[in-house]
Length: 120
Image (tube, rainbow, N blue to C red):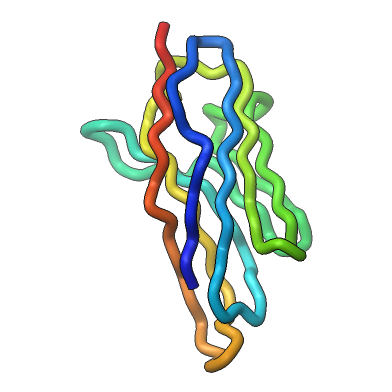
């Protein structure tokens, strides 16, 4: 299962960006979909996650500013990021786990990462 992320870029502090990630391949079911980020010199951290039923969770640092959503029919997940801060600067990765269609084997896939840079 392949994930392709898009939507990163350069934005001024206080601005907004929307990230999208599309899953493709032989998919029986996608369980959770998540966004992680990794800033230079720091460990990768979970930003937000959403279950197949729409239950969401967020890192404390982004609560009230970021919104994760998904379209189960299209196998996509999005991250709406508002009121961006310079400390949100990082490479953002999407992640999904579930069951492959042809083999009924579990998968845990990552997208290629998309750069988000917030200038002060």
